[in-house]
Image 1 (tube, helix red, strand yellow):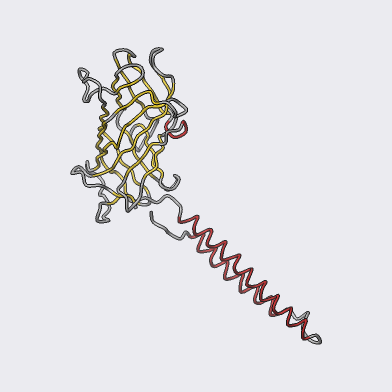
Image 2: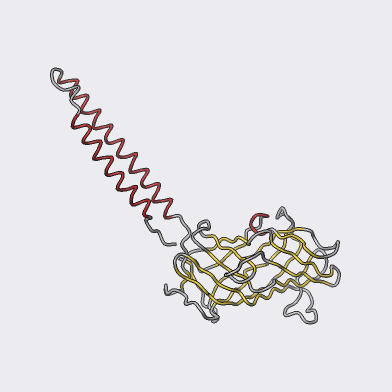
Amino acid sequence: MQCQLSARSAFRYLGVLDVILSIKKLCSLTTGCRGRQPGLERTYVMNRKLSLALAAVTLVAAFASGAATASAANDPQLTTSGGVLVPVGTSNIQLTQVGETGVFNTEGTTKILTCTSGTGAGSVIKNSGGTVEGEITSLIIGGTGPLASGEPANECTSSFGNVSMTPVLPLCLRSTPTMAADEMQIAGGKCSAPGNVKYIVAGTTSGVCEYESTSPLKLDFTTTPSDAQATIRTTSAGSGIKLIKGGFLCPTSATLQGTRTMEDTSGNPFFVS
């Protein structure tokens, strides 16, 4: 992540210098303890210097705190292993599942659906000004169940039978300066008009269950020197989904689990700095 000193922090630093100079000027004009009692004068001078030093330390500490807060802002750049910005406008991003993708109960304590494979692809459409955006146009999720007719991957396994899990595309993958540090979000639709994420879960036993996220999905991503990976927060606020269509065998709400790497179409990893 880039660490940049904001204008506010710079003005705060200048304010520190102005206040220190003002304190010096005030102290030079104060003569109340000088004259007839040299011992008291020496004590006064020492106390005055100590007060000035403490004031300076306090102000500099306040400046440092402000600078640290500024540097913690989210300011991502998607780069190659050589540190070159990933270009925009081409189908040049690939997503690969790490471990299992799961669906949990609302509390995130019990897994009710397990998928063991997943791949995605799309385009980087913005990579500047502290904003990274990509539109995902393909996302295939599979498991260890049988291959159902018309499905691109084997079914996932669940507590209510084998099912296919299909997101409604496209999806908008983005990270902006308004988000928390190292945060990424997934929204439904194009990045120009983002909405909630929708999933279709279908199986012989359960029938068709349609789910919608309660807000954009929130993920945490790794930064350099690690290659780019984004992990969904398995909480109601981070990945809560609710049933909007389906029968009584469909769970009424759930949370998601999963981690994806980001790389080019040749499998070379991207990095977030």
